Length: 104
Image 1 (cartoon, rainbow, N blue to C red):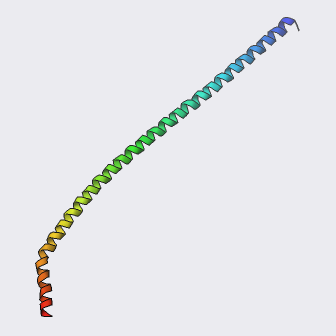
Image 2 (image 1 turned 90 degrees about the horizontal axis):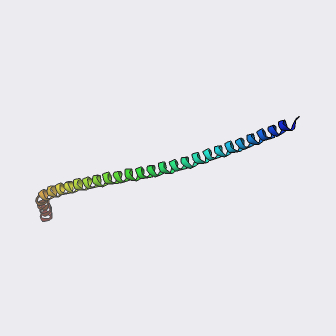
Image 3 (image 1 turned 180 degrees about the horizontal axis):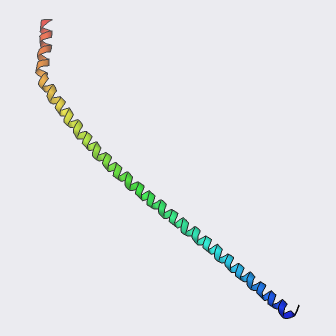
């Protein structure tokens, strides 16, 4: 083989090795970028989910507090109604007790 052909083959092989190394480096960089972007997106999604969870919890607590207040008002109204009914019957009950004590 002439020397020119051998030099040409050597040069082509060196070029191929350089292109292969460059392609491998680019592929590694693409993978690294994709992993970095994926992790950033995952963190962003987790943060958004945590924010949404906190907001849902805040809304649920607000609804629970409002319902608790409503139940408290209803209980107070019922207690007042029962107290008024008891007061209405107090005289009758006192007369009944006095009547039994006096009869005995």
